[in-house]
Amino acid sequence: MNSALEAQRSTAARIGIGGPVGSGKTALIEALIPVLHARGVDLAVITNDLVTAEDAERLRRSGLIDPERVSAVEAGACPHTVIREDPSLNIMAGDVLEERFPGVELLIFESGGDNLASTFSLDLVDWWIFVIDVAGGDDIPRKKGPGVLRADLLVVNKTDLAPHVGVDLPRMLAEARQVRGGRPVIATNARRGEGVAAVADAIVAAVLFDHAPAA
Image 1 (cartoon, one colour):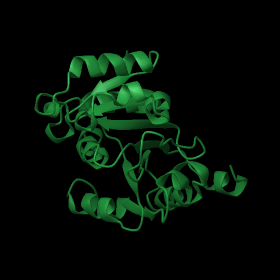
Image 2 (cartoon, rainbow, N blue to C red):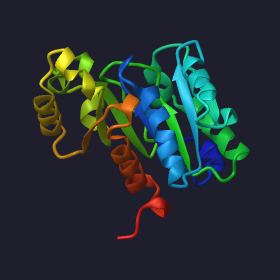
Image 3 (cartoon, rainbow, N blue to C red):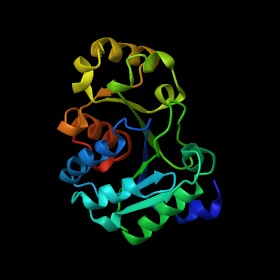
Image 4 (cartoon, rainbow, N blue to C red):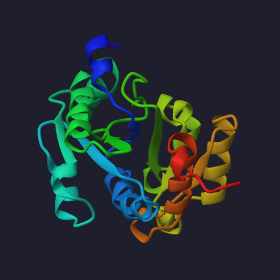
């Protein structure tokens, strides 16, 4: 990483949330914000879209977070670029939020919707989540995309849709765990808050040690 950029960074943990279009990345963030706030986590969000700030505006209007704590990066091209090949725009957006809110402990970077090959640069984030959804098909784990395989946490969202789209959810989850070789998989219904506490637990355990419950 550029040493000048590194010098600007403070102590906030940085996590990424990626996944295909419509998998529920923004809905997961909306569900996570109150859960993390209830645990005393001081956070901010950076969204990525191709040529809009739609996801950022959605979060700003949500009433869940101070609108000033939501920043938007317009990728202008393939979403891979600004989270993996050249994450400097996101790094700078995170630095600005850390400077504006000195107590921030957690920065959440949401990738623009992308395919199963989307991955985060470890120059940008310390830990990352990949979100897929049941409606996208139960063959997603078997396709073994880099996002599915390499993410620190795989979230299988929209579990409530399984009976409506002909998906065998237990089999899909079992196959996801099998291809990930022991890396965690959490099933969620972000709209209803199901499984969200478990995702928050995973974030806290991975990067927010001060908020972890006493053993």
